[in-house]
Image 1 (cartoon, rainbow, N blue to C red):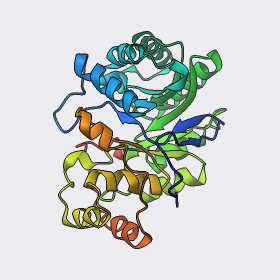
Image 2 (image 1 turned 135 degrees about the horizontal axis):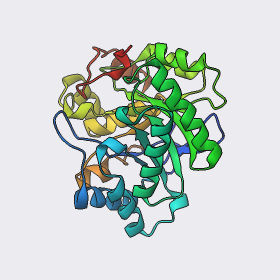
Image 3 (image 1 turned 180 degrees about the vertical axis):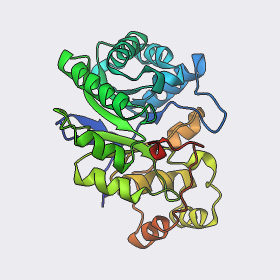
Length: 288
C-alpha cells in the first residue's frame, strides 16, 4: 500500500524507465452527453491545474482541446519538459498510416515536439486495425515523436491479442474506467502481471456516486470529501488517477489527498462495492 510519503509531485516508473506523475488532470467530457472543455474554459483548466501543482495532463484528439492545452501550457510559463502530456488516437484515425498522421496532427495542435504518452483510445475498430495502430505507435517512438505508448479501454482479450504479436515495445499503460463500483479486477490483475500500469479515468464516477452513503460515511471519518476519498483509493491501489473538473476549487481540492491514509478496513469496504457501474456510459472493453 502506498503511504503518506506520497505527494503531488510523486511519480511512478513505467516499464520503459520513463516516469509518469501519479495524479493528472483529465480533459475529457464531464458526463454523459457533455463535451470536453474547449476554448478559454480548457485554457483556464490547464492554467489552474498547473498553478495548483499538477504536472500531468490527459487529453485525446476526440476531445477537441489539444490546441487549447498547448496554448494553456505556453501561457503558464512552465517549461515543457516539466509537464507530462498524454493524448490518444481516436477510432476513425486508427490504422497504420492514419495513426501516424493523427499523431502528427496532435503534435502540431499541442505545439510540442514530442508526446509523453500516446494511447490507442479504444479497441473498437477491430483486431487487424488495432494491431496496425499499435505498430504505428512503435514507429512513432523510434522516430522520437513519442516517448511512451499504451492502450485504453482494453480488456484482457485485447491485451492478450496485443502481447501475442510480440511487440518490440510493451505498452506502459492501460487507461480504463476504475472506481469502487467498477473495480476491473481481471483487467488489473493481467496488467499487473505484465508490468502495465493501470490509469483510472472517471475515478469520481462522473458524480454518480458522490452521495453514496457508504462513501460519505468514510469521507466524514477522515474529514475529507467523497472525491478526495476516491482519488486516495486509486492511489493506494497503485493506479495513476485522472480526475476531471472545470471548477478551480475542485481542481485544487483534488490535490489534497496526501495528508491521510485510508485504513485497510475502509479500503476493503470500498473494494466490495463493485456493481459494474459504467459511469461514462460506454465500455469499449466489451468490443470484439
